[in-house]
Image (cartoon, rainbow, N blue to C red; front, side, top):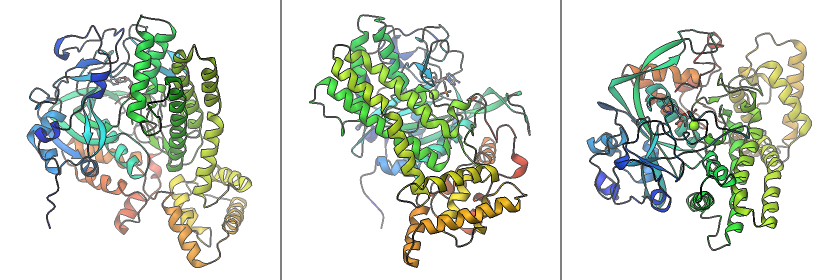
Length: 565
Ligand code: AMP
Ligand code: MG
């Protein structure tokens, strides 16, 4: 029977759910221009946001929308291909129905790389010109009982555009679109994908790699179609954003600096931690609870990333969401051949490598705590409690990592010697991380199935012996009494160790075909990665449950990506 539940089918209905808490409770830049026509790089000295009007892409065409998210938000699928919706989410807000606002907003933020404060990424060298360069939020509201913000990526320049054109290309938009929905399907908190439209006429140039290039740096400029993807989250507040206000307050940069910091902290608590932080508590107590709750989410997040092989690639403070979810899928990658120092981004450096992410998170958490400190200056007791919360990050993180590795291996408690042996074997044998853990999840009686994950072709006898021994000890460590217990544990392991992950070589043909208007592969890939723990069809298994093909090793744009997006 047809479902006549009250799904939203028009923009007018959606407009009734609008509720712009950020722009209504926070302070706009007092120097903002009228009507959001504010598209040239400039310094923004104060205020929490800048009203900016999006610049639509010309001749937008529907590429994809997330049916899962539409369903969660109570939006009817037909909206995604309806003209008013296409217009809005390809950047044309000129005719939005009331009470939707026709001017969006961009926010400034500061940048710390691995805990170190930077100012020189801003063209003015002051940090006042750094922020959302091409991301513009256009909606905030309560849909299906939850508050969401919707943000266009690639809808033109903002005052923070620096040298950029404010656009995003179809390639990077598809990567982010799929990765967000994949992360969600993996059960890991993340920004979500709403919709993606591409321009049939407008193209921009981006540095990229020649075909089969092995160059580390982009070696050619390519012409690519522009696109606008809309991402959705409870908020887009970042650690870097609190830092901007924390730095200004610390330096007494203007008379309202401390107040602006307090306002954005309260706003962050309300948007992201309303359930955990009681708003009737004294402010300093709220701050401490906020920090504790964020520490909990951030450590869980990073342990989960490592569980599924995700590497953020550029885990700066400005790519670290206050809500503790995954944000900004640029130079990301899912690990294939296991290496602790795996880093998909050529510019990323070791500090953001796969197994260093707990340390990178700790640095971001320190940046976060520093930005709160000016608010506790007159309360030494609270300040020292904040410092204790900060210094306990490492131990909290370690606990989460131990739990995660134990769960991946079917243990209640980490068997340290067996775990360490496995790490060594994984490195020496060059295993595919996903395939190895998935094969283990079947709890095989022999070690042969594990060999499906081996990249090395000549495994010497000695190494094989070590694998056999390891496998035997691991089997014994599981203490499985009955076949039923084995089956139960196996099912559990399969809900922890995914079968399908979004590998770069799967993305490349999907976005290349999409660039010429063929979305078949994109849709197929979306389906595969939206159900990553399931056993799918034989055909899908053969195509997607595979190690990286050997001819693709070291190929630029597949084995690694540049930041260009
Ligand atoms: P990302 O490395 O993607 O996190 O971007 C770093 C900063 O550069 C962000 O503040 C972006 O908004 C900005 N940015 C990246 N690409 C562009 C672009 N094409 N135009 C304007 N700003 C950009
Ligand atoms: Mg970013």
